[in-house]
Image (cartoon, rainbow, N blue to C red; front, side, top):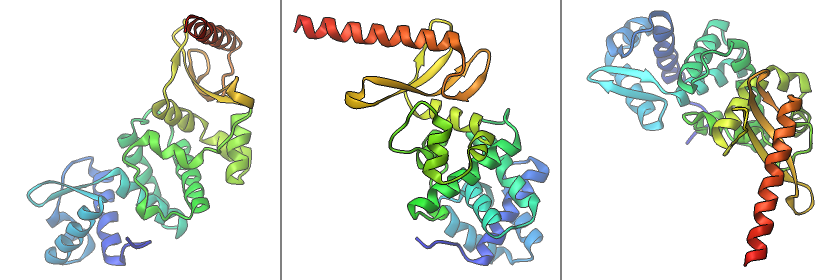
Length: 248
C-alpha cells in the first residue's frame, strides 16, 4: 500500500465527503460525484472501486457510496499535511465525530485529537493511509507511552514531544477513547475509571481516564471522592488476592 492515493482518487474522495457534509444525505450517487468533480462517470467509478478495496469508501447500493471513518481520517490527514481549505478538514472532522460516537464534543476537540494521532503515527513511521480509524477506541493506542506516572497529560505530551496544552485540548476525546478501549472499573457512585498498574511489580495504580459525574471525561481522576473510592476498590482487589493465595 502506498503512502498517498493519486490526485484524481483524492478529488473523488473529498467530493464524496463534502457532498455528504452539505446535504447530510446518504448515499451519494456516482452521478453527483461526476458532476461535482468534472470527472467522467467511468473514471469516478474506477477510482471508487479502488478506494473501496482500500477501505476508504463503502458501497451502499447500486451506484451509491459513502466515505468510511478510515477515508474521513485520511482526508483529515491530507488536509492537515497539505494545509487544504479549512472546510475540507472541518467536513472530515464532523464525519469522524459521527462515526466515532463523539458528536457531543466540539469540532475543535476532535480536530486536536486527529492532529495528535497524526503526530503519533509519524513517530511510529506509519502513513495515515494505512491507519484503520474505524475502531475509535483503538486509535488511542498511537498516543500512549509504554509507562505512566501520576500525571497522564504530562506522560502523553512527553511521549509525543508536544506541549501539554495540546494534549489538554483533546483531553475529553482521549479519555473517551481510553474508556472505550480498555476495561474500566465502575465505582460505587456510578463513575467509571480505567486503572493501569505501574511501579515495581505493578503494585501501584494510575487512573488513566475517568468519566465522573462532576468533571465529565478527564485524563487521570480529579474527583477527591472518586480517588477515595478507587483506593477502596484496590484494597478489595488485593484482599481478595491474598485470600485466594492463602486458600491455595
